[in-house]
Image (cartoon, one colour):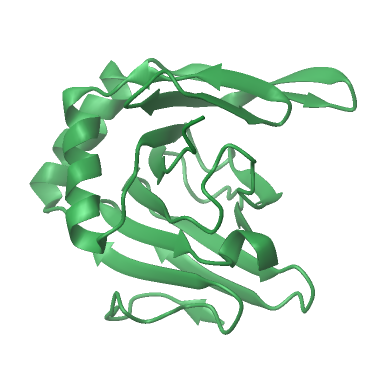
Length: 203
């Protein structure tokens, strides 16, 4: 199932079963999306991501940053990150998507992909730090990229393209039953910035 160049209804669930994904399309004007892209690109404390795979430390070309309302820690790929306080721009974007969706977020994991050569393998966001079945709000800036879902058992796939200034929400049992990825492509040579707003469980 491929979804591209269509009029999207944010109330439509793009998954056929066992999860909920809503695509809102562009939630920012072209000028605002351009402004936040430039601001995030130049002002976020980007660092190359790290992962421990088979006991070996891997440094990725992709860069990441972790921001939140408190000094939350977040562990994935066996590496723990400590949150940086919200910037003015990130706090505004958080408030914007909360108003759009009715969801609540207290943290944000940001990803910077320098070109289509950088992507993300199949995975689900089921870390113990995250609210169980909580919403993840994904804001995209820069290069338009394909985003894919795959059901863990049936292997059914759902693909869509995430536009500059667009919002995607994943919630309910999506992370339990579905994997997602950002496939690499040689067709794109410009950067993409992705903000994934999340809800960390307060200890």
